[in-house]
Each structure stands twice: as structure tokens, then as C-alpha cells.
Amino acid sequence: MMEKLSNFINGAYTPPETGLYLDNYQPATGEVYSQVPDSSPADVERAYSAAEQAFPGWSTLAAEEKFKILNRIAEGIDTRREELAQAESRDQGKPVWLARTEINRAGQNFRFFATAALQFASESHSMEDRAINYTLRQPIGVVGCISPWNLPLYLFTWKIAPALAAGNCVVAKPSEFTPYTAALLGQICNDAGLPAGVLNIVHGLGGSAGQAIISHPGIKAISFTGGTATGRHIASVAAPMFKKMSLELGGKNPNIIFADADLEKAISTTVRSSFQNQGEICLCGSRVFIERPVYEKVKNALVEEVKKLKTGNPQLDESRVGAIVSRQHYEKVLSYIQLAKDEGGTILCGGEALHPPGFENGWFIAPTIIEGLDAACRTNQEEIFGPVITLIPFDSEESVLTMANSTAYGLATTLWTGNLSRAHRLAGKLQTGIVWVNCWLLRDLRTPFGGTKQSGVGREGGWEAMRFFTEPKNVCIAY
Ligand code: NAD
Image: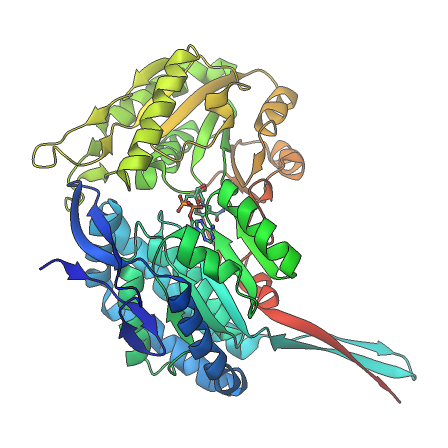
């Protein structure tokens, strides 16, 4: 019998009210291996009622008690790390070794925000001898958290942990493509003693379960990570209802390599920042700008290194690239490779689907490097979100800045240079929410995380997340 996942509502695993399920595929084999609830608005309503009832208790629980429970969830994730990593890899297609690092981060998310529950504070404003103002930061109530398929448990917990730490109750929906680890989280929360109803997990499609969350009048804030088109739709529904919104959306990130950089480090990191998780990370650099004097050298080294990357069986440590998450995304990525060819690009390596032995029906694409395309063409403007990068030579700081800033997106830049003044100068002018200088994906969870332009609205991380998930109230006391 095919395994059926359940919603997690009011502390109990619950089948969807309609009894309807969606097939859940294993990307490496292309086969259905479990089923996920195709939840309806009725399931979201049940989750909402449970959250609403749990709110008075959870929001007034002493910070230290919240800390202990959230910290136990972190420990539960750590304890079940291998099981969660295996589940994540099977569900998403990523190599198991990579899934292990992401599960570590899911535990860290809970540990980090457990301590935030203890340390969060607010400001006061004194008016000399007339009055004192102080700010109360109160939990919002019931909030909605919706996450994508690329870093499933990592991004799911990145939203849920601060929402709970700030005293809210949550209705959360993971991606219908990668529901499995979210389904295991319910058990971990129960084992940690999280009171019933504080966290409710509803599975299903964006258009039904997701839509019911974003349009629910009682759900006061929406934290969403996913595609820009979905984000635009969510804003159109939630903004007229005056919900608070944090939107973390798509990217088309520049990776800029100057001739004065530590090229060895730039090249080895670029291999990772381009192809880690099959290029399905919103922070992956997809447009690699290389200063003309070192263009051939960097290009040749990149192509040589990328040809060595093994693509295949996600179970093996030697597999650096796994399977693409779904058939529809696999077809989308392949269609962009075709578009790049149509636009006149030259494929330097990859450029095709792969059928590794034993995984002939899986959705694998060879890591692909393309050159010869104008920075303004569709391939260089639209998010592909797969193992595909383009190389573009540049001649000056001004010209690369113009090209880097020329897309509708503004999530993250990686900048490689040995010139400190240039690094500071460009960091100030790049239109992205994050600039990594001589590194990539080096994360301190206290820093503001998010994008500008069509990469999103709002910031996550540290106090930014705690502020998002609380409502500030000024109290003015006259002396
Ligand atoms: P998606 O927008 O298709 O789906 C994301 C989530 O939204 C899923 O859970 C989906 O079911 C839900 N959803 C879809 N329609 C909805 C609706 N009408 N109402 C409510 N929920 C709805 O995105 P995806 O394909 O899962 O993820 C890939 C995208 O996510 C890429 O664009 C990537 O750049 C982006 N992303 C951004 C960040 C970031 O931090 N900025 C991080 C990871 C991924």
C-alpha cells in the first residue's frame, strides 16, 4: 500500500476532509512513492480554529518555557537527522550529503529563534520630564507560513521558528512537491511538548490549500517564499485585506569575478554557487560576469571542473548533482537550454538531460555552461532555477554594474575582487538585498535576509523576523 501523508492539526495527524490525495514523486526515479493530502479550505479552517484556540495559552507562556520547547524541537531534528536527510533527498532529488547539511540548518533555525524568544526586547523613548513612551511588541495572532520545494525543511522551519518564538500560532503549508519532512515535523513537535494547535501543517496545492490560507480573514500575516508570480498573486489577495506580508521571491543573481581576485577560490566557489542543489537555490549565481583579461582562463577552468561533477544517484557521496525536483520543472529547465541555443548561445558543457544507470527515468540534467549571449536576452533576464549558468565578459566596473543591475530581480550578488575599495564601492551600488564579497552563502542568522525589486518585500532573519512576527504598539505615559 502506498504511504499516505496526513495533515497535522491540533497536535494530531488528520486525513484531509475530502479524502483526496495527490501523488508524490521521487525525482531520481520519476516514480510515485507516497501520497499527500489535497487539502481543501475546510482543512485550513480546522487548522485555523485549532491555532486560534491555542493562541491565548501560547502567547502568554513565559519566554523561558517557549525557549525550552523550541530548543527541544531543535534537538528532535538533530536526533532524527539521518532519517530526515534520507527523506529530504528521496522527496526532493538532492544528494543525501547535501540534505544532511540542510537538516542541520533546520535544527539551527529552531535553536536560534528559541534564544530569540529569551532575548527579544523593544525600545523606549523618553520625553525629558514630560513622558515616557515604550513599545510593546505583541504577537500578531494566527499567521500563515508558505514555503517552496527547493530547501524544504530548511525554509519551512526558517519561517515557523520565529513565528512561534514571537508568540504566534501558525498555519503552515509546505510545497506539494516536497511535503515529506514537513509531515515528520509534527511528530517532533509533539515529542518536544509543543502544545496542540500552536503549529498546524496543511498539505496541498497552492491554488486550494494555499489560497485558503492567504485569503483567510483571521490569518493576519503571511510569510511566503517562492516564485515571483506567486508572490504577486499573494500580494494582490492579502494587501487589500491589510495583512502583513513578507515575500521572499525569485532571483537572477550576478556572480562578478574581477581579474584581481583570488581566482582559484573564485572558481571553486563558483562551481558550488552555480550547481549546488542542482542550481535550485534562490541564491545561486546564474550570470557569471568575468573581467575580460581573465575570461578565457576562468572559463576553461570552470568548464574543466564542471565536467568532473558527477550527476546521478543521490545516495552516493560522489554524486555532486542530483535530480531536478519535478517533471514540470525539468521540462522548464530544458526549455531554457533550448532558448539559450535559439538566442545564439554556445553550450560549453552539459546542455542535455542525463539518464544515469539505474535511474533512467529520473529527471537529471547535466550541469550546463553557456557563453556568447547578450546580457539583455531572455536567457540572461529570466530565472531558470536549474543547473544552468551563462558566462559574460566585461571591461569595466561601470559596465558590469549596469549589466548586474539590469534584471527585474535583486536578491544576491557575489563579488570576487582583491581590491578593498572596489568591493565597498560596488557593494553600495549593487541593487540586491545581499552582497557576498569573496564568499558565497556564508550565513549569520542574525543578518537581514531578503531581496529588492521583484525578489521580494521585507526581510527575514534575526530581529527582522521577530519584528515581522510582532505588532508594535506605542504606550505613552505622561508624568
Ligand atoms: P511557487 O511560488 O510555485 O510555490 C511556493 C509555495 O507557494 C508552494 O507551497 C505553493 O504550493 C504555494 N502557492 C502556489 N500558489 C499559491 C497561492 N495562490 N496561494 C498560496 N500559496 C500558493 O515556488 P516554487 O516553485 O515552489 O519555488 C521556486 C521559487 O522560489 C523560485 O522562484 C525561487 O527563486 C524562489 N525562492 C526564493 C527564496 C528566497 O529566499 N528569496 C528561497 C527559495 C526559493
